[in-house]
Image 1: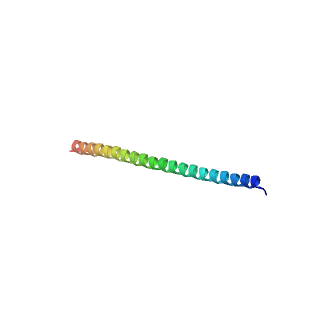
Image 2: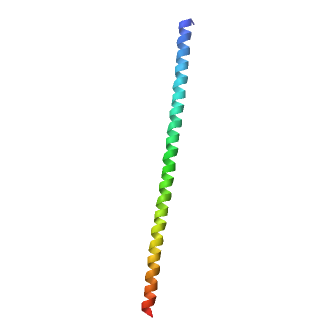
Image 3: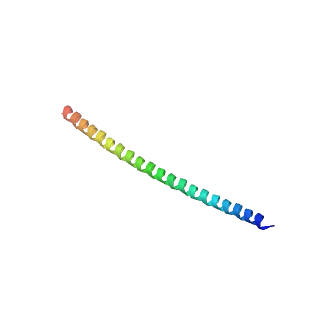
Length: 75
């Protein structure tokens, strides 16, 4: 193998290593974006649950009030 062939082989190996590193960085970036999306999803689910609890509390208060009014009418 002469110097030219050796240099070409080294460049190919170097290019392959660079591509592999670029793909690794890209993979980590996608993973990080996925983590952010997952976190946002969890926050939205918590907010929805809080809203539902608030609505349930309001409905329960209305039921309690109506029950007390029914009891008053029975007397």
